[in-house]
Image 1 (tube, rainbow, N blue to C red):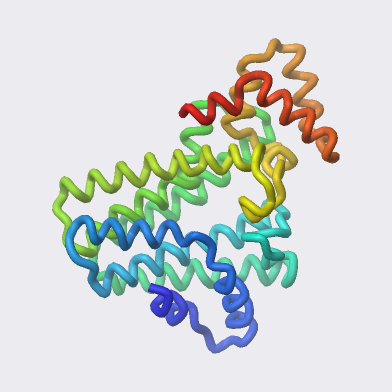
Image 2: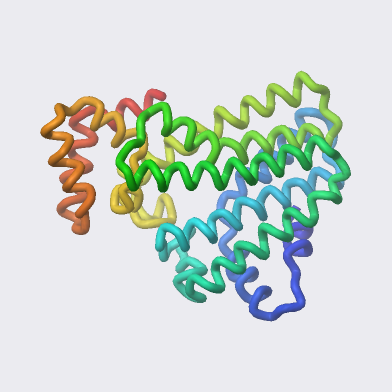
Length: 271
C-alpha cells in the first residue's frame, strides 16, 4: 500500500515532491486505507486493485486535510506544523488540488464502474459536509439532526467508501458489500463524535492539534449542541456571545465546565 501511495503521488516538480515528502513523514493512523484492506480480506482475497484503492482513499483523505487546514487557519496537524503554516495558503491549496486530481485520474485503473461511482459520490459528499458545517456554524443554526447529516457526509462517507470498495476489489458478494458499507458509515459517525469529544477533553499530544479548536472556530459539535438544547433562551444567548468572542484559556475552561454541567459530554459518549 505505502509503495503504491508514494508512487502515485510522484511528480516532476521539485516543490510538489518536497511538500508530499513532508506530508507523508507524518502518516497518521491510516485508518481508512486499513479499513479498505481489512474489508477486502473479510470479503475474499486482497488484489492489486485493493492496494490501489487503499492508496486512492488515503490520497482523497489527505487532500481534504490540507484544504481543511487552510479553511480553518490551523497551524498544527498530526503534531507537526501544517502545510499552510510552512508553505502558506496558496501552495497548500494547490498541493491539495494536486493530490485530489491524482486520486481522480488514477480511479480508472480500478476498472470497476461501481468503485468509480462510489469514489466520485464520496468526493462530492466530503465537500458538501464541510460547506454545511461552515454555513451552519456561521449562522449558529446547527441542530442535532443537521450535525448527523454533516458528519455523515464529512467523515462517515469516506469510512463507508473504504469498506465497500475494499469488498468490491476482492469480488465480495452483494450481502458482504452492503454490510461493510453500513459498518463503515456507523464507524465513521462514532469516530467523528469521539473526535469532537477529544477536542473538549483531550490534549494536543493525543489528537495532534490544539484542544478547544472547534470551540474557538465556533464549530457546533454534538456536546455543544446538547448543552444549548438544555439551556433556557437567555442563558443560551449569553453563552453564544461568549463563544463568538472566545479567545483565552480561561474562557475555554469556563465553556468546558458548562458543556460537562449540562450533560454534553455524557450525552455524546452514549451515542
